[in-house]
Image (cartoon, rainbow, N blue to C red; front, side, top):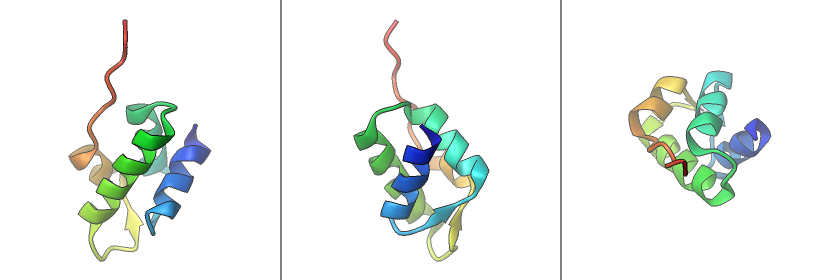
Length: 68
């Protein structure tokens, strides 16, 4: 799942710190669409900074709702 998250960041145009990749994967789960959408949101939030941080992910990524 973390490789999917890393690819989502690359697809959105940025690299991400390892912590950001782990955090995105944990918040979004295995949904490829959600990973891409939330990675793009984090990349936009990071602005001109070349790498997305875990703090960026925590600020803007909406956790996926899990079914019970």
